Picture 1 (tube, rainbow, N blue to C red):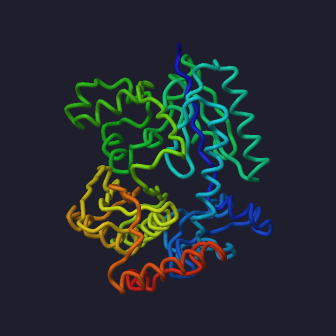
Picture 2: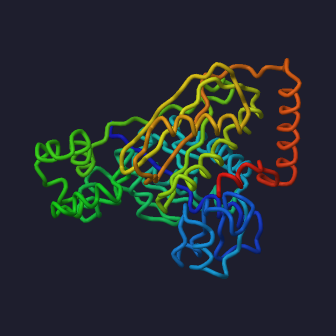
Picture 3: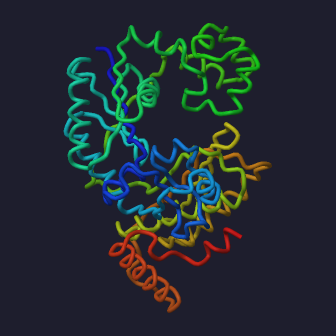
Length: 387
């Protein structure tokens, strides 16, 4: 049976959620800041109206408002986005046997049993339900392989649907620029362009032995991808009743982070989100994991710590500790993730008074943010990071 994989990529997810929540923001350029200070934060997300002015995720809001002075601003509300993401996931499992959540706003579905025609009809129904239930849109690509489905979804954003059968893949890839392939960043693109390789068609026609000699395993992977070869399976969706093995958050920015200060800000935001979920689900973690896509190189490291924690501040400091151990010569980060592993039930008894006081503080902050919106209250240490 031929594989039929669908990739759902939500359109400007954070910004669209905010526009759906506040109709006054619809149709207007919108900037979602990682923090509440309008001119002392970075762009976590932006609407398509803002993107039209050159605004991109990862840039400072000072630069963003210089490009688009009339843009509206809201601070990121991670609880709102997580809630919508979980509801979308539950919607998808009603339509597919296998569903994999790749990130907060991207999902894979294995629709092989349906056939290509029925799969396309199912995806249209999914898009209609998302628009009706959430007042937001998503783009879907359907293809015989995961990475091709992802590229197909990107090619039809926003609010698009592209169906590629086995015979359509070669034509789709032939004129596609190499930088449209997920995983081929600016540096790899430059190297390929210097070899007069600009499209996937040209990449597919290059001797794989030459690419392997020049780029190692990455060269073979690029050659296979340019020919639509990808054997990755869609992972099964884990039922929510099963205890999680880890809790993490990741993000891919559109504007490359080039300073440790900006990188630290993003890691802090991700750590806050991880800590909040740990406390909400009642877990402590004794293993911290950090991964970065830096200079087109995937870096990942984890470290086990003696004391378990669900404190966002501690998770952040542990992430910085791991970051320092990577000894980066330069910062050129396009994507990053923070994960808490080694999970165990949270300690109900805190022996030290200072620990009991800290947990009461975190509980109060969580309750305030749940009532008045995420990032209504956040640690003052963020100001120190941004200096």
